[in-house]
Length: 198
Image 1 (cartoon, rainbow, N blue to C red):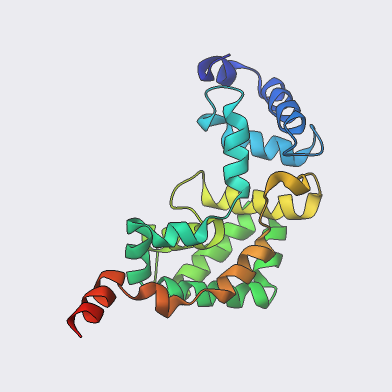
Image 2: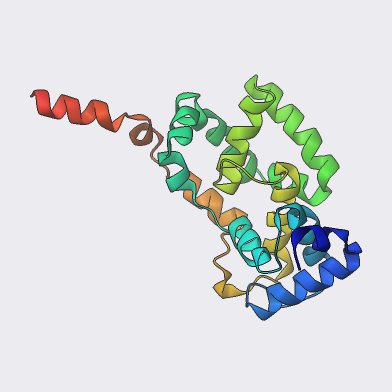
């Protein structure tokens, strides 16, 4: 069954196929429910074969922050004061503000992001790329709002299998809190040149 055929299926049928697949491979403990519907909706466009669904969901649940920050694209985000966005995001998490927003759903998220962006004097890509990297650990992916809401649900609904490699939002924030932004911002090539010249 190829991607065209999968996308032509009625959504309920596609959700059933993906839910059963995710349960049978051990990523999820259930094959039906709100989380599965939301995951299927968010990920369906990137699934060309049923077996692709495993990687898509596993990728969504993972948090490769450090490897992303070490990449060339990650370096350009660091140069654009990613640490300042991280500090504001951590503050919103620690105050409980972000949790409340996520409980409100997509409308709450959109309203919050608009205010968050204004407070940082950022909008568009200069707002959403840092948020994507800080919250998902990735530079690319499906809609950031829907992704963060799904990650929030994954952490509260109990359907993600313990062996799925899921990094909860709270765990992500703990990792962010420990990032040494100053060390990351240093150019390793500059350091090696400085070391050699002495």
